[in-house]
Image (cartoon, rainbow, N blue to C red; front, side):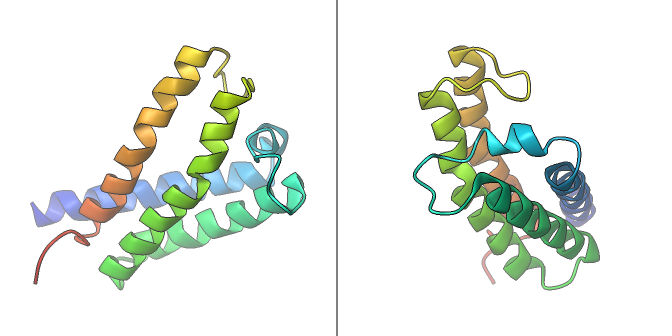
Length: 128
């Protein structure tokens, strides 16, 4: 089970590095569409900053160091970006192929799974 946890942690890290890179490059405009209108910063700043955070979290996950702390930080990041997903649903914003309320609603259901993935894969849920 320990090996599976490590592999899922590395996979999540690689995924975050990939998506963080997309924030900074080819998908910047689509990510900007998800920034809620009430956020007090420009959408471009939010996308760039969250991309940098995603890359940093991804690298931290891959390093396999301070697993629990990194898992908790990653879970908190997924919680912090959830309002953007809600905003995309509520405001009917098409981005990333999510061009229907049904598709956007299904995506909302996956966010808690990402939180659990971060916590389980890093062992942050284990009791010592």
